[in-house]
Amino acid sequence: MARAAPRVVVVGGGFGGVTVARALVRNGIAVTLVEPATEYATCPSSNAVIAGLMPLSAITFGYDGVRRAGVTLVHDSVAGIDPVGRRVRLAGGDSLAYDRLVVAAGIGLSFDTIPGYDAAAAATIPHAWKAGAQTALLARQIEAMENGGLVVLTVPALPYRCPPGPYERASLIAHYLKTRKPRSKVVILDAKDSFSKQPLFQAAWRALYPDHLEWVPLGQGGQVEAVDAAARTVRAGAGLFRPAVLNVIPPQTAPTLCRAAGLTNASRWCPVDPVSFESSLHPGIHVIGDAAIAGAMPKSAFAAYSQAQVCAGAVASLLAGRIPPEPKLINVCYSLAAPDYGFSIAGVYGAEWDRLVTVPGSDGLSPDDAPPEVRAREAALGRAWYDGMMRQLFG
Image 1 (cartoon, one colour):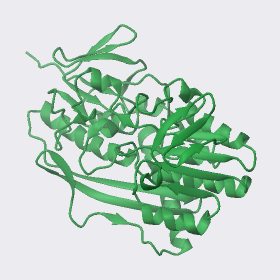
Image 2 (tube, rainbow, N blue to C red; image 1 turned 180 degrees about the horizontal axis):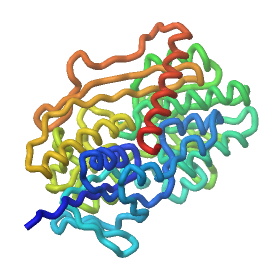
Image 3 (cartoon, helix red, strand yellow; image 1 turned 180 degrees about the vertical axis):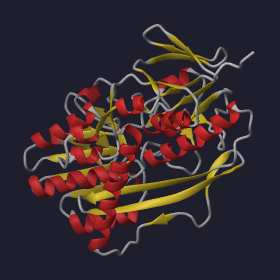
Image 4 (cartoon, rainbow, N blue to C red; image 1 turned 135 degrees about the vertical axis):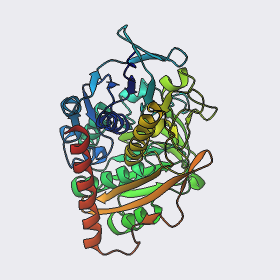
């Protein structure tokens, strides 16, 4: 009797989900991708939208190219996952059986951690940590702010999506203020005393925004204590702030879907095998991207892309009865301090016991003392990376 073709379901249509779906199709495996939205707005480059450097439409993509690649799209939300019966239940009432399931569902926002800041408050005090309507809202608020107004951006403790992202956002907001509203200023209230690419960002701030950007670390009272959404104020150890624009980035976890399916441990993130990204808690389910506990790998778009490539190969091997090979993964992250001022960090990662670690000697950071033409070249490389990635995923 002929053996039934394997059924693979992918949940989430972002960097990780689209990459793994397309890679599996290239391996001759039929894939159903479940994603509620019909368009995807990318978090990479969303800070440029907030700073008025490009429209939201420039970072928004449809799924026609994914369909043309041979992936079956189902635009619906996942109501639940049955790890024992190996079925995904959809909000519309249907269900999908699977032999292997890949969950690439991104992050959940912990609205229960900052007194006064919840999902309702985010309607007027944006987090903009999921790109789309929130991105546009924050951009409109900054544009409407009077010259001389204060912008306050709050940053949580790690782990969260895109470790250098808040500092790029603050930099580009400062660029906007310097060029459009020069009497204004942005203040970062940070729950940490150190952050990714710190020397590079701080050198840029000293050179470009000495009067337009202030960083308040944890040791100087940067930890947020409460938000008053009605009064649009934020209280931190450093005092009470009454900004014209308040951008609260809350702490994060794996999405509710992952927690409800029993894919998370006490950390509220998903433990996985570092070779296959198969869940340590439920066989047959793989978790990639922001929701996964990926050791030394940061929660970034490029990391999700790298994990998706490795996961697709592992799923193909497992379906064929083979042991997946040990992987090597890469991550490259570009940041902008201004439209023509960029820098990057890179690393290679491998499996060690139950975690991913940085391969010794593989990590690289842009030099501290690079001349302006090098910073401009890195900014251009970052744009080229983004454009190439979008063509590969959605073209």
